[in-house]
Length: 418
Image 1 (tube, rainbow, N blue to C red):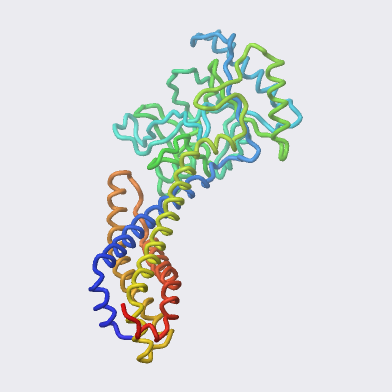
Image 2 (cartoon, rainbow, N blue to C red):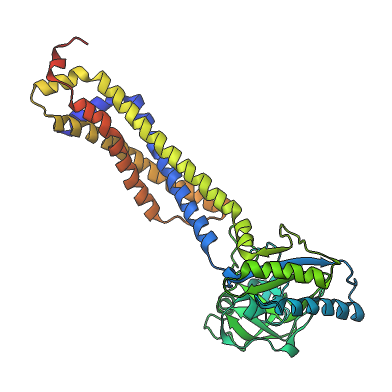
């Protein structure tokens, strides 16, 4: 089977050829970029926070009878109330440990700022999230301390709402440490916060702790700072680590014990978190939009591929109906069924080939546009290569049924009038 007769036949059906070529090109461009975005979303949803998520739950509440203000008496009274809750929680049979913390990964409530290498630095070296934590925070969250030491009880101070504290020691994530000190020697080094002049020494490094902000394009996802400043406010957030396999029981015990200790509290939080919640629900809520986006794009990809396949089937079937007499003549002249089948498959391969070449150009162009408009990453050309193979395979699969019907046309068709 030579190409000139096939090309000559395609020239007689320019409209159909152009339409299918454009459909294949647009499908390739959209599907490649959609699959790339889906891959990014899935990777985002699956990334670990660095905590023991399986056994972690969070309590957010408001003390109705807590004193307001930052006076010494008010601070001490709130501190006593929070410490009372922590003692109650730690005494429960199914609780491993509990700690007060200002925020948590994925909760969309954060205190962000700059980390500097020099005092009074105008432009920060790195951007980070600051977590104010009480004692037992590292153990409760399940963070892995890979260098240095934990805070001592004497290093924990009060973090009053609205206060501006620069403690003498801090613990940072490995990602932030490597950002600040690329040589990997962050432990023991001095840093400064938010353009300040008070030195802070890095006494410990944890392997990983994600920031609360999961916004698309966030470039400081793993830059976290732990400050030994006990959260002191009438609104509290407490991380509780249940014993393995005892999450449900620990949550029920915590709810009952806290209300028994002080009925004058509201076990309801802000930012979409209510009362006592397992961290798995926090993760699900945080990534709900990403999961929805991935599902929507997946459905769009399937629809586009189905429509493209259906278009190829329909156009080829139409051409087969138009060419029955020509096919019959070829059969009468000695063409086998395999020859007819190969003819239509080759014809489709030429159309699909032109479509994927144009589609590859459109796919790269679309990705460059989205990089500029939405701060997306550059798409690997592997997505385009796989897309090309998939579209060519789809075309061959779609054309097979009508091409097979064409191969069954009897030579007697040549004797019939059109």
